[in-house]
Image (cartoon, rainbow, N blue to C red):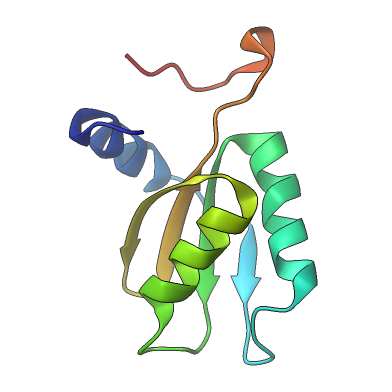
Length: 97
């Protein structure tokens, strides 16, 4: 569980990132959660851009976080930010308190 201080730090780090995963008009297919899962394994902190789904972005983001066992850092506008700590301490890119 992330603290508000951790969320703020992750949100700050995410401002410099480009979206790695995009959720298009086709919807949240099974391949999307797999792509997000791989991206989290590689990067720990991942931005997802929504192309559509204006009314359901927050709910879709929560579902994707649950499916990938990640933390939903925030949803703002067309972007959701996800974080999942690298299990191997030597490969961790982000240090949280």
